[in-house]
Amino acid sequence: MSIVHVLSSYGVGGQERVALDLAIGQRARGHRVSVISLAPPPDGAMAKEFEDAGIEVGRVPKGRGGIDPTLVPRLVRALRRLEAEVVHTHNPLPLIYGAPAARLVGARAIHTKHGINPGSRGHRLLRRAAAQLVHAFVAVSDTTEEQARAQKDAPLAKLHTIANGIRLDRYAPDATARSEVRVELGLGDAWVVGTVGRLDQYKNQVLLVRAMAPLLSSRVRLVIVGDGDARPEVEAAVAALPDDRARWVVLTGRRMDVPR
Image (cartoon, rainbow, N blue to C red; front, side):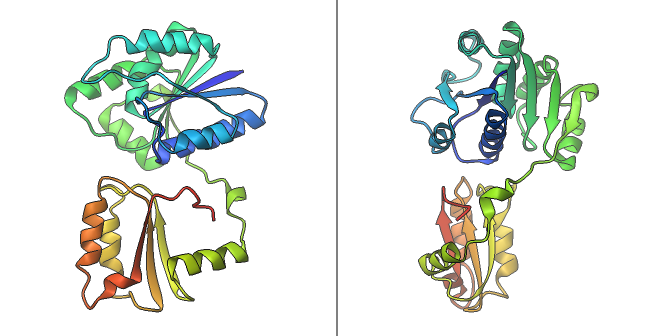
């Protein structure tokens, strides 16, 4: 079976990581799996991870500005070339353009909603219209399903919840790697509270910094892995910590070796 995932971009984020894990599992089961980004070049860091996993990587960039009337026909051409039988879109933009393209090539259309996905009234109307075309609309958690219901994102008969999973095989204990990372980050033998993810208002790493403030010391450290729009706010929260406690916080930025 030919399965094509359609993403907003190859940036580092939750939807891209979920799509990669799905693609790896699908390929291991004998399916032909491809991925298409709707972002213009240059590619984000996740493109290489898809390629390294043996997943065919493609691009059908959306034009600048608002609605791109050429994107659906261009996606249709790409899906036909890939002989797509299942098209799996991730988050709003791929849904709006990918669902009609999937239908036009006769493929099954699956959509996954990874977050609350706020947007303008017009954007929400486009998403709802596209959701009428999918065969299944999947939320990644019970909370996400509740948000989909509240926002009337999709017909209830098509709405399903499949909780995000973690590939545990990537996180086997490794004493050597643990020691190396502790040295690299200057953690010594302290207790470490860590978080990995995009820095934004929804994940609210600023609140974590403030909550950890009374505990931070040479014996208790905070490590924040990731990057995003809220990085300036996170850095400001760290800088505002009293009593020179900012030195017990490590901001690594984006890392592609998180399992390590």
